[in-house]
Image (tube, rainbow, N blue to C red; front, side):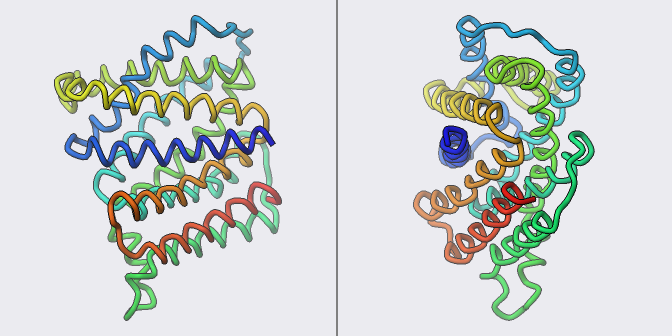
Length: 288
């Protein structure tokens, strides 16, 4: 069950970093918010490369890296844009939809097929998304559906879930063609360098803002670095869909953070919705 504990740790760290960024960096732009954690892991990734064994690189590594990196860039930028503009407990739980998208990306890339249980899990995830917004439907049965479209962060996070579904499968390809630690150091080290360079060059971010809170920046860098290690080690031990589904427990942690740290309302509905979504995701992973 080591993979399960690592996946849960990755879920907790993911939710923790989202809460950390919303608490300490909500005054910066979403562009800069998406850079800061990964800018501060560049030296950590570089140092990590000195202490890991360089594996034999398989033929599928570079082709996968070419498309996984830009997909991941877009996903993470949109991820932070979502939590920047909307309540944490109404955005991060929508990442529970990722296993639904993995069913389709897995079919294309890994030749995985849908099953009856998989479809059941998908329906539960959708039902959980409905319950998540139930506090807005006291006079309108279709209120939650409207809220998903009216709440920009929730809509964006649905797109993020789809992109993570694609990049997660691609990340598994990278690991299979190298090693978990090598993949983590290379992929996210390059992410930090490239995204920082691009956004600073086009004027969407500035080093003045990125370096304004160095100690807090190092804090988020350490959280993300630990998440990457847990994520990739767990991914190497179990099927990608299993690992990603357990990691989507981050939705429940985000609801707790939203309630405790940000005094967000409607938590009882959001917690119930997140729980249903997580159950659906678990069915997909275990029986889909």
